[in-house]
Length: 310
Image (cartoon, helix red, strand yellow):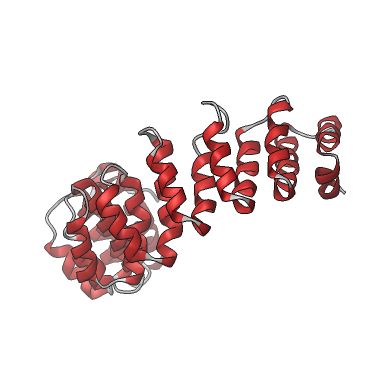
């Protein structure tokens, strides 16, 4: 009934919802439904209704924007450009551009290039690229290399797609063409994470090219559990102390604990970061304690400074 009413009498549908004994969240969800269903058949009317309805929310604008872009991308872009600051939120235009890019990437890119620097612009390029790479990764990479030097977050979906579609050598070649270390490192880190699912050895080669820091640590954390145990053990043994090594040891030792909890616990004791060491040690030690309480307790007594929890 609401679906029909949303299209035949949307004002009445909104009034009926407001009169119901519902929570604010439930009412908001139904308002979204009304605006979205109306915009699916008459986006211009839905956009006009937003301006005359009190207490509309950013999610109401997004519901209209998505449906508008599906039905008439060019009109949706024009509407988005006419909105005042504060109408919608930082996700409205990226949502619209994601829909627009399905049918007209050039139009979406042109609009995004005109946005002021900031989060909305970065999100917009990320939205466009995340759709574009499914159809034309080479085209998206070429465009990014020439135009997106200041849109670091857009290189995450580019890297993810490259990690799934390209060989490691091709990924490194593209990283060299991108507009600086921030873009290149974001791209490489994302590619390494994606590649770790299908080719951990190639992913490791990509991750090793990253400077030590959060991105490298995230890649090493994934690789700690993705690499074969013997390979991971040899690799970790050769790593110098660092945030990245801690991340790799954490996931590797946790995965190893199932088959050798004693070795996993001893390995975790070498994590440098106090908080992370305690977290991983507690998990691995409890696994050891359940399998070999005598051996685990003996080791705990030999290492009282670790303050292991029982």
